[in-house]
Structure formats: C-alpha cells, structure tokens
Image (cartoon, rainbow over all chains, first blue to last red; front, top):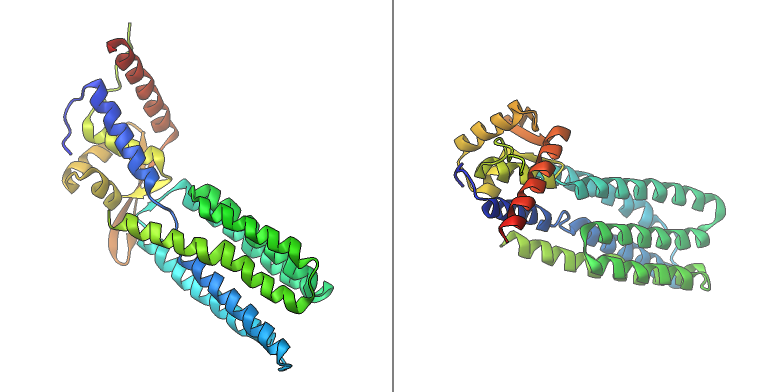
Length: 195
Length: 96
C-alpha cells in the first residue's frame, strides 16, 4: 500500500476493508475451552465411577487435576498473550468475563465446603452457562451461546438428582457448553489462520 | 459547501492505519505491516505523522529482547476519524 492522494470512494473502500479485516479476526482459539471441558468432564466421570464402585477418596481427582489445569491455563495464556500482535476490545472484555468467572468459581467451591456439594454442582452449571453465553455473544459465535443453554437446562435438571447422578449431568453440561462449541470454535479459528 | 477533508487522514496508508487502530484496542507495528502490506519504512514515517498530530500514541518497549512498537488511537484520533468519515459520506452522497 502506497501513500497516495485519494478519491472519496477509494477512501471509503480502505476504511471498510481495514475495519472488516480487524473485526473478522476471531479473538479466541478455543483451546482452553476444550481443555477445561474435557478436564472437568473427565474428573466428573472418574469421580462418578469411583462412587459407583465404592472406591474411597474419588473426590481427590478434583484436588489433583484442577490445580494442574490451572497451571497449564496460566502458562498457555501467557504464551498466547506474548504471541498476540493486536489486542482487541473483545480480548479485553473476555479477560474480564473469564476473570470474574474464575473468582465466582473459587467462591462457589469454597461455599460448597460449607453448604454441601449438591447446591455447588447446580451453581457450577449456572456459571458454566453464564460464561459461555457471554463469551459466545462477545465473540459473535452462536454455538457457544446455544451450548450455554444446555448448561442452564442441566442445572435445572440437577435440582432433581442426587449428588452422584449430578456428576453425570455436569458432564452433559460441559459436553454441550464447552467441548462441542470449543471444537467448533477451534476449527473456525484454524480456518481463519489459513486464509 | 463541504468542509475540507483532514489532510492528515486523506492519504492511503495513514487512513488504513487509523481505520485499523479505530477497530482495536492496541496493535503492534507488525500487525499494521501485515494488514496494510506496506513497507516497514513507510509505516514508520506515517505513524510518526499520526503521532505528531496527536491522533495516535506510540509506545516503545522490548519483547524477548526485540524492540516492540505498540500503537493506540487517541480520543483526538477517534474524533478526527469520525469527522473524516462524516465529510466523506457527504462527498459520496452528492456525487450519486
């Protein structure tokens, strides 16, 4: 692109082209959504299996895998930040939304230790639904919005289930709100990289 | 009678740079280079002109021991861009 004088229509074309180019870039590669989707689903299913088979201390799976997931996310997030050559407003809003989600998650888990695990699972599914609904809206990525509705629906179903079966419904919630939309998001992100 | 188009923005590359910056929070020099396809030297000159007009802020720092230039549009830059687009629309509408 040279630095020539312009006609009015040429100017408008440049403005449209540049703004569209900046807006069409997907702000999230979906990897952390997929990662957490599988990690929490895996943990829930392992915990469920240990309960069904009467194996003690199955809940330890959470205590082991969640901190490891947190460390991986922090390292991956930092690397991604370093690679980014542009910071959009969506990036900024997403970091606040996920930051608030993280804080709410920690508070919910803490409250769970006081009030029991049954209301905790319900709250977790509400939070999963909330964060994916807002993220989907910010990214303009509908599958995340639709997926969040599955999580909300699972939260309602969970009210009528016992603690053990709630672990299964959490897996369904994550499959619908994290795993499937996460893979779709990642494939869209990858296809953009090749354009 | 039409207002005159802002001469700072009425050039191909400066307009492209400001249009990119108006759409994002901040951008590295590399991003501007990739999106506009212009040479590094040319972009350097143009962002300097935009900075002199207070349309953008330029922050220089280091990333992994390499120099890094980050550009961000200012409030004055946003107003100038909006006025430019407004006048441009008037021009285009009268030509129709």
